[in-house]
Image (cartoon, rainbow, N blue to C red; front, side, top):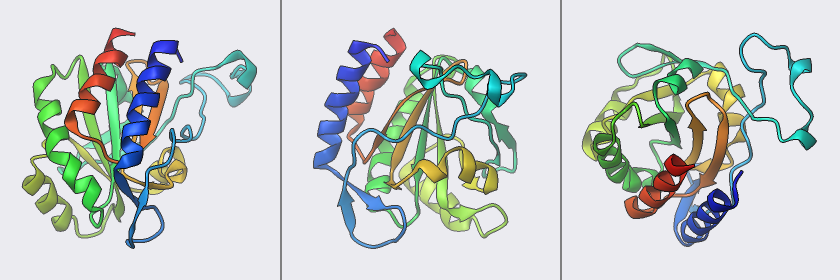
Length: 202
C-alpha cells in the first residue's frame, strides 16, 4: 500500500472512529469503529493454486472469490471487479442505524461516477439467500442506495463476512480484484469522496 493511500486510510479511520458502527454479533448498542479492517480470506488468482501465492513477506496481492445473488436474482461473482477500476464493497445490516445513515451518500456517490471508473456493491450481512428480502428492498429504496446488493450466503461468509467484526465494514478492490484496504465504521459522503479520489489516483 502506498504512503499516500496509507495516509488517506488513516485520516478516514480517525474520522470514522468518531462515528459509530454496530457490533457484528448482535443488534445491540453501537460500538466505536475499529481500525482498518482485516483482509478478507486469501484465495489464489484464477488459474493458480494456493501454493503458487507468494509469501506474505513479498506483499502478495490479496484476492477473494465468491458467488452471490443480488436482489433481482442476478448471479454476481468476483468477476464484477473487472467491470470497474475501483470497487467499494459495503457490508451492512438491516438493524444498523449507522449503516442506513451513510447509505444515501453512498447512493449519491454511485450515481456520480462512471461505473467503469468506480462502483459500489452492498452486502447484506443479516439476510441470507432464500430468506424474505422485502425488508432489504424497502431499506434500499428508502435510503436511495441504488446499487447492487448481495444477500449473505456460505460463499460470501468465507470470502468477506468472516472478516467482519462490526457493520458497516467497507472493503476496496481494484479492477484486477486485488484488495486495497478496508474501514470499519460509517462515514460522511465527503470523507468517502476523499478516499475514493485518492484510490483512483493511485
